[in-house]
Figure (cartoon, chains in turn purple, green):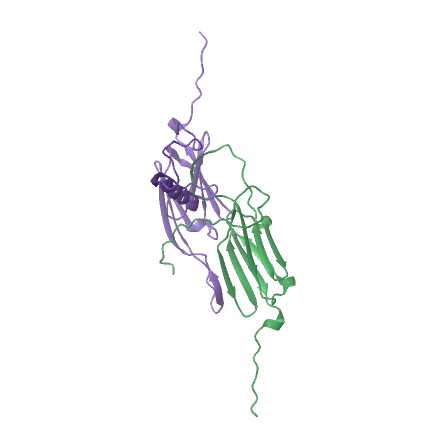
Length: 151
Length: 132
């Protein structure tokens, strides 16, 4: 937690100092790989995932455009999720390719969930190229409402 | 080709002078474009975009693809956000050889396939050289 605001610069702050250069470097670093909505701390392993939670469930979302549900393999063990698969692209023969930006290949991503889940209550939905996995939290990880008794 | 391992790529935001009116990020979809004898085919990855949320516009010789995502209203608390969710937009300049009335589009599993038939004039014609 910063105790002084950036606008209230300390006396030793003068243009061109090492401190300022470092600060500029850091800003550039963050702005270059933190797009809007995405965190700068992310894995390089395909596919990128978004993980969120509500009171009862954890939600994992990932983008796998052009894949079919049967080509994606999901396994859950304790608090670890493994996503595995291979993205195949339909390559057309005897045509002249102008651009080829879409990629094919195998992938395997293993990640740890923030809480334990009930592996028997996992559902996955694949719609418009987005996979959404809903994992029910284990009973001990669910928030509990505490009743306050009046004396 | 299939022996390759996929690398995670960061989604690239569109940098335009005119901002989008919707306050969501707009990304550049990855595309494959190939030309066959009869048509130019554009294949674009737009995960999260349903068949009803794509708009394709050909104006003069500019092709504009746009996909809109439906953002879910949720009360979820985010733990990790590795990719941003937003719309997709991309423009291409076409040669004036497309039969605009016969453009076909299909959207499946977040992939848009756009077939732009070439107008007859631009199909290659074999020219026979007569011997004198």
